[in-house]
Image (tube, rainbow, N blue to C red):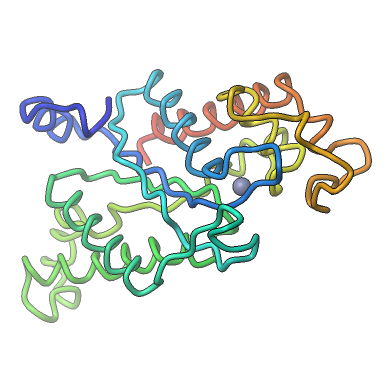
Length: 245
Ligand SMILES: [Zn+2]
C-alpha cells in the first residue's frame, strides 16, 4: 500500500498493526546511452512493490534526488547533485515526520553507490540523530544512565526504529549484484521496466562501465538474469521483514 494513497483510517490501522514502512532512496544520474537516468530509484520502487505484494507493508514516496558527486557528469548529461546540507536537513525532517506518524519499523532502501557513500550516510546520520533527539523529547537528560528509563526507552522510543539497508541484502548476492548500467543494472531494469531500456542505443562509443566484463555487459544483459536477481532480492527482504527485524 502506498502512503500517498492511504486514507487516515488506513494509516492508523497500518501503524497500529506495526506494518513496516519502506522508503525508496535513489538519485537521478546518467546510466549510459541505453538506460533511464532514474534507474536507481526506479528499481528500488519496483522491488518495494513486489515486497508489498507479499507482506503487509507501506511504501513511502521516494527520495529521488540523492547525492551523486557528479561522478557521471552533470545536469546536461542527466545527472543531478543536490546541496548536501539541504538534502540532509530535508531527509531528517521527513524521517522525523514518518516517526511522528507512528511508524515503528522504517526501512530506507538504498540502491546507489555503497553504504558508506553520501546517500546512505545521510540517512544513517539522520536516523542516529533522531534516535537521541526523540528520546530527549520524552525523557530527562541522563535517561540512559537510569536503568528503569533505559529499559522503558528500549521498547517505547524511536531508538533504532529507522533501518538503512542496501536494496541488495547479503542473502540475495549472488545472484544479485551491483554495477553501473552494466550487466546487472541493465538486467534489473529489463526485468521490471523493459520500456526504459534501449540496448540498440549501445554503440562502440559506449562508456567503459557498459563493458566491465568480457561476457557479462550491457549488451548481454537479459530479462532472465534480471528476474533471477529480482526474485532473490525480494525473497531476502520478505524473509527479513517476516523475521520481525
Ligand atoms: Zn545505478
